[in-house]
Image 1 (spheres, chains in turn purple, cyan):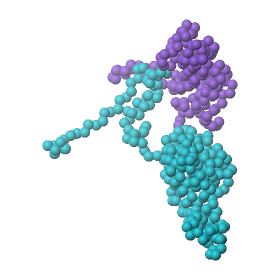
Image 2 (cartoon, chains in turn blue, red):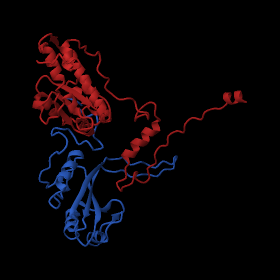
Image 3 (cartoon, chains in turn green, purple):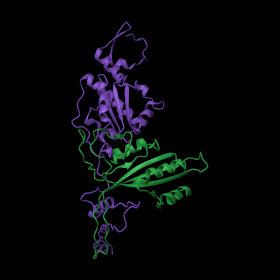
Image 4 (cartoon, chains in turn green, cyan):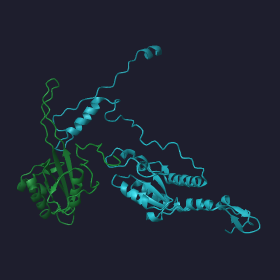
Length: 170
Length: 244
C-alpha cells in the first residue's frame, strides 16, 4: 500500500508523524481531530471507510533466559488501538486514493470522536463502543447498536469470557 | 358436495376420505376428515428468514419448485399464517422477537426449523450471541437438516408435516421417544485444550493472542513460540525382517 504524496507531506511536515506501510500514520489523541479536519477539508478525503478498535490486554515482561538464549521482552500495558481509513473519490483532480491513520487509547480513557467531521462515522463508532468498549468523547448518541441493550460487557475484548451467562439461553 | 360418480376415471384426493352415495351426486364424509384435508393442503407460511436458508426458501417458493403446488402461500404477517419456517441463525437479540411473532400466530399452528443453525446453532453454537437451537424457546414440529437444505429437502419437510397433521387428526400420531441429538460431531482437528492435542500447540496459540504486535505484525519482536514435539518415529524391525 502506497499512500498519496500530499497526505504524506501533510503528516510529516505539519504534524511531524511517522508513517507505516500497512497501517498509515500513528497520531496522538490530541492531534487526531486536527489531522482529520485537515485531511477532509484540504485533501478531499470525504469518504469515511471504517473505524476499527483492537483491544490489546496487558502482558507481563518476559525476562531473559540464558539457557534458551532468548532476550528480555518489555511488557505491554492494557490499551486499545483505534484504526481509521479514509478514501477520496475521482470527483476532484487529486484522483482516487486511500489513507489510514491510527491512535492509541489507554484503557479507561476516551478517544475523540470524528462523527462531527464525517457523518458516516456516527454508527461505526457506536459499533466499536458496543463490541470493543471504546468510549468516544463528545459523540452525540453513544449507545449499543448491535447487542441487546442489557448485554453485559463488550464481547470483542480479549478479557471477555465467552461463557458469559445471558438469560435464558447462555 | 357434488361429485360426478358416472365418470369412472374421475379421481380426486377427497375420494379417499368420503363415501359416495349411489344414485345421487352426493358424497358423505366427516368434518374431521375435511378439516384435516383442508388444513394440511392450505399451509400458509410465515418465512422467518434471517440468513442464507431464506434464499433457499425463496427458491422453493418460486416457479421452478413452486411451493404453491401444495397450497402453500408465503404471507408477510403472522396473523394469517399456519406454519412458521425458521430459516437461519437466530441470535439472542432476535429470539424474543421470533417468540413474539410465534405467539401472534393463530391456532392451529406448526413450526419448521430449516437448516442447521435453526436446529442446533451449528458452528455458531458456541458464539456469545447465538441461540443454540430454536427449540430451546418454542416448539418445533419438523426439522429439515442441511446447510442450507435443498428445495427438495424443504418439500420433504412439508410432506412430513402434512403426514403429521393427518396422523394427529386421526389419532394415530406417536410422539417420537427422543428429539434429535443437539450438538455437533467432534472436529477432525483436536480443539484447544483437548487431551489429544500436543500442549505445545495450546501454549503457542495462547502466546500468539497475548503477544500481538501493536506495530501491525503477528508477533511483537523478541517473542519465541514453543515448538511442538516432532511425531514419534515408527520403528521398522519385525515387518522388514518378515518381508526379507
